[in-house]
Image 1 (cartoon, rainbow, N blue to C red):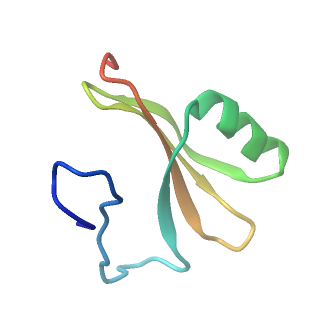
Image 2 (tube, rainbow, N blue to C red):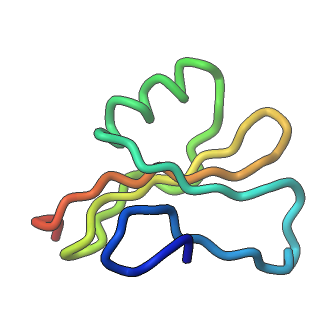
Image 3 (cartoon, helix red, strand yellow):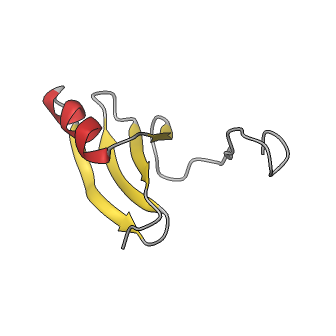
Length: 80
């Protein structure tokens, strides 16, 4: 945690890599569809299509040209 739970900030974790090369990051975006389209146009690879996480939002997983895995996360409390 980066601060008190009732204040804004970025939460995260540092974990040991298991069978993974490169880095893995998750980015909050206003639209997984919009930003996912831009990523695919830049010749990146879609690993896991947009998936709903009920009550949380939507997430999709991509891989860049160096093998790094990154996720786009869109907050949507109505996701199902």
